[in-house]
Amino acid sequence: MTKTPEHITILIGSPKGIEKSNSARLAKGITTVLESARWTSKWFHTHQVLRSDESWDALLSSMARSDVILLAAPLYVDSLPAPVIETLYRLTQAKNALHRDGPPPKMLAILNCGFVEAQQNYTAQSMVRLFCEGMPFEWSGGISIGAGGAINKRIRSALTLAADALRDDILVPDAVDALTGKPMMPPWLYVFGGNFMWKRQAKANGLDAKRLGDRPYEDLSRRG
Ligand SMILES: Cc1cc2nc3c(=O)[nH]c(=O)nc-3n(C[C@H](O)[C@H](O)[C@H](O)COP(=O)(O)O)c2cc1C
Image 1: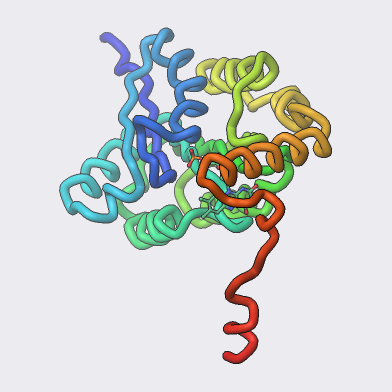
Image 2: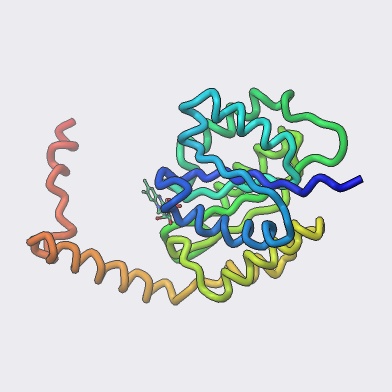
């Protein structure tokens, strides 16, 4: 009898969606490896599954036959974007439809943030881990990426290592954390580069860069 191919469900939680987000680019680092090992994959966008019953049902049926569920999302205000939280909440309501015989699917989260330190994502990773505890899923760990999800050689190796582990059905190695936890550049240099970018944008918009720190609404908010 031929074995059914392994399957991964990818849930993208960025408003930029599957085509344009850093989250989706990072998720591809995992799926490329699995697809070359003949896994099947199905991609969903949190914002879309919340809007359409048809997409929601398709998500549940893909999850029910998954070996791995991958959530890839940006960090928003030290947390998960609201549509991601809403999707996770709705999944807890639908969990009976996801119970099955045999081993539960593994769940992995790739979270990326704008600041250079990957550790900014840790609280949001805990949110996904706690979600998993209440679900018929096995938490496989989180991959946290800083610097706007920029992919260099180290990040690419980390994603490949994680994908290899998922493919081989073994624990995601600690080396993944070691590779992603190192800032891409010294934080002062990142802030310097960021400030340079803001000043350039101010100039391009005909504004005085010295006034970037202005708070024109401060007095109004004090008056209530
Ligand atoms: C509304 C909003 C809130 C954000 N909050 C944070 C934050 O708290 N910490 C941080 O490091 N980056 C923050 N960012 C930056 C994003 O996490 C970052 O740009 C990320 O790479 C976007 O990924 P995406 O392309 O997958 O959406 C925020 C961005 C937006 C638009």
